[in-house]
Length: 152
Image 1 (cartoon, rainbow, N blue to C red):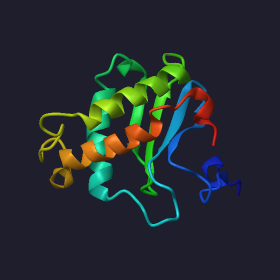
Image 2 (tube, helix red, strand yellow):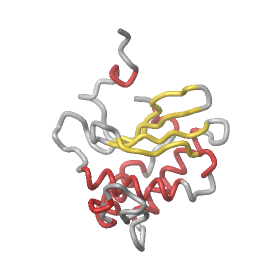
Image 3 (cartoon, helix red, strand yellow):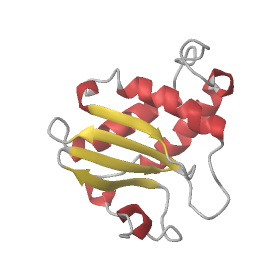
Image 4 (cartoon, rainbow, N blue to C red):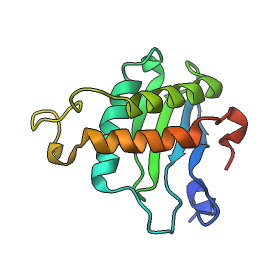
């Protein structure tokens, strides 16, 4: 069986940042890596879930919302995947958008989006303060990120 592309990345060398994971036709996947794999320093379920709610909400309310396909956590608990329509949003504009929404997430004020039993099946582990902290951390990592830095 062929080994998938993401398993061919040396996770011992991979540093936190933003990477171009793959292109599938017009669908582009960015790997938003928060933590260094294989260190035991993983995002908790509450951190993953809380960041997901804030950032997905900000992306889907952004000026590029029609290009947003998906934002969600990695199973390895080291970051997130952001999928977008490359016909509607260039990689350069996607990098700028990710910077914008994580900066906004770090300053997010108000109630956690989707924090009710009607809106979310696991609403009790959502915490706006955890989301702000992780968004601020990641915003600092990607502050000076460019398209040229997207390569693993």
